[in-house]
Length: 140
Image 1 (cartoon, helix red, strand yellow):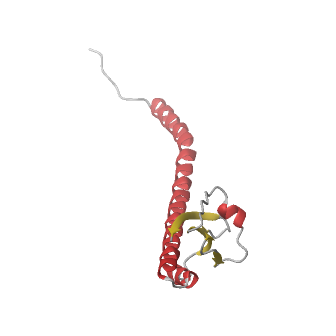
Image 2 (tube, rainbow, N blue to C red; image 1 turned 30 degrees about the vertical axis):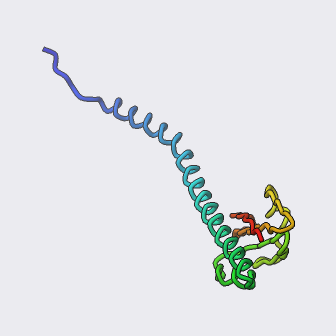
């Protein structure tokens, strides 16, 4: 009868070395996944905030109240935003100095007819980049 033995030290060390090399290949992927999740959460939050501002402005225009005051109260200093209203109730207001309108409105489809307004709300990040956008229509 042949006596069976366990793994030798060399086999264990080789297996651990192969495992370490495999982990080195996986670590950058996990790191990138973490950055992607962080970016996605910021973008999601920015779009939600822009949607809330847009709905607040839309409600203020419907009720005949001051949309800028309503939007600023709603934001309460938590984030910077810009709002453009195109069409019948045309106006613009911002909580950020000199917003880059070409960056903010690029890629938006502004379909304004004679009796409607398009509301574009943009939320800005700490680095001055757009983190969220929302577009709504007001028919009157």
